[in-house]
Length: 313
Image (tube, rainbow, N blue to C red; front, side, top):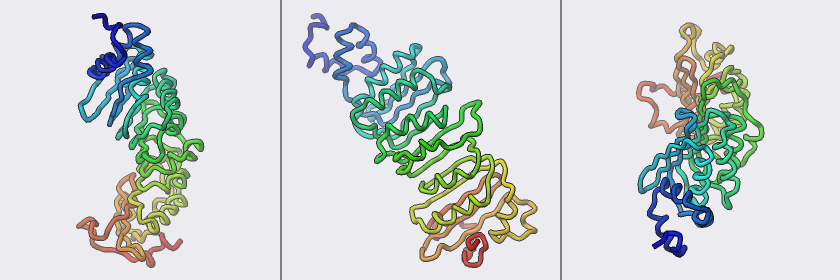
C-alpha cells in the first residue's frame, strides 16, 4: 500500500507514533505530507525545551523533554531547526516548566524563527521559567512579550563571552510579563544599582552590578520590611564607594570595618514574626526575609531596627 494513498486519519495515527526526528523526516517526503503535518501537527506536551546554538555552533541543538522522555536533535541546517520548532511548538499543550534559549548571536536565524513562531501562536505560550543567554536587552524583550504573563514565574539571563556592561531596556521592564514575574536572576554585569528601582516588585532577585550606590541600597528597606512576600534581594558588585558608610549605618563598629568583607545581622521586622537578615560576604550583599524560627543557628542576636541608623535615615 502506498503511504501517500492513506487517508488523513491513518496518516495522523502514523505521525503520532513517530518521535520528533521522525516527524521531521516525514515532512520531507513530499509537499503533500509537509502541508498536512503543518496543518495538523501532532499535539505535544513538552515540560522543558532547550535550544542551543552556542556550544555546538554552527550546529543547533534542540532538546525536548516530556513525561514520556527526552529527545535531543542536532541540526546542521538552521532553517530546518527553525521549521521543526515551529511545527513542534504550534500546538504545545500545557505549561512548559523551563524554556532555555542560548545563542552566540542575537541575529541567528533560529532565534528569529523562535520569535516569529511565538508571535504567530493563537495563544501566548505558557512558560514558568525562561532562561536566556545572548543579547540581553533586545533578546529578552523580543521573547518575553510573547509569553503568557499569568504563568511566568522566573526570568533568568546569563552572560555570553564578550558581553559588555549593560543597562535595563525600558521596553522590557514595562511589559506585563516583567511586572508579574516573581523571580529575576542574572549574572550579566548591569551598569549600576540605579536598576534596583525596577526590581523591587520581584519576590527574589540575584544580580551583578558594576557600581553600587548607597541611595539605591536604601530602597531595599521598604519591600524587605513591609512586603510579606519578599524573600531575598542579592547583589554582587565590583565597586561600592560608600561601603564603609553602609556598614556604619548598620551599626558595625569601626574596628570591625577594617577587615570589611563579612557581616551578618538579623533585624526584627515590626508587626511581624519575620526577621530580616542583612549579610555581606566579600563582594556580595543580600537582604533576606524569613520566619524567626528559620534563622541561621550561629547568629542568635536579633536587633531592633529602631536603634539602627540604616532604617531611620
